[in-house]
Amino acid sequence: MTLRDLIILVIDENAIRASVIEEGLRQAGHGNVTVIHDVQGVGRIIETLRPDVIVIDLENPNRDMLESMFQLSRSVNRPIAMFVDRSDQSTIEAAVEAGVSAYIVDGLRQERVKPILDMAISRFNAFSKMARELEEARSELENRKIIDRAKGILMKSKGLSEEDAYRLLRKTAMNQNRKIAEIAQSLVMAAGLLEE
Image 1 (cartoon, rainbow, N blue to C red):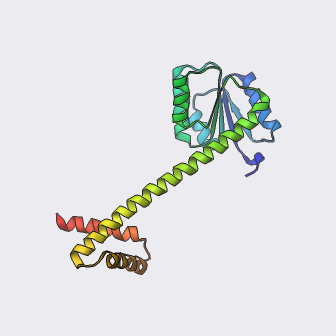
Image 2: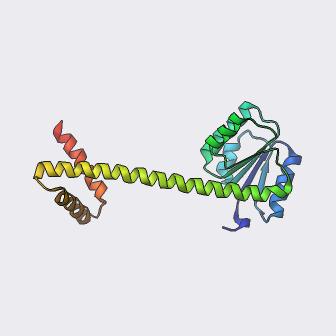
Image 3: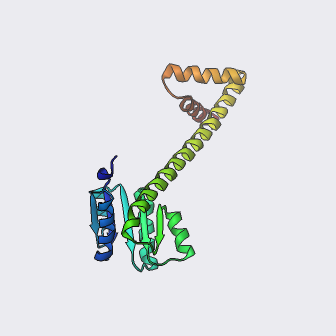
């Protein structure tokens, strides 16, 4: 994806400040920039536009406005750079928790827009990769637990060794063109039904 391919949505109620961000993005080579000044209905706009990156500029955000933007960031699963004029520790923590990729306090200058956008995208990608790896690790752990339970069932019911029980699971999976964890899950479910 090239710079020109990125679809960037800028949300800013202040037209002058929005133009600073927009100009900074255009000077950095980003040609596909949409600016909206009204946060009402922003969810529908995001659905329609499907931006790759969202830049939010909040001049003097109140708690409700921040919470609304944090809810937005949790739901869109995209890099978000947020500029605010002032902040406190709890707001910064809430922004991080909500998944805001870059939270910049009192730092809106045209020449800073590109590096901040690049950082937001990099942080988002790094966080997404870590989240995927964590989910894969959890899934793998769960699969191992199910396979171990299935081996235990086979060892008990057929008098097999652990190695032979695993071989039987693997052979069945290969014969049915399925994953071992799927076969193990089916066996554990069937054993659970028979015990009732």
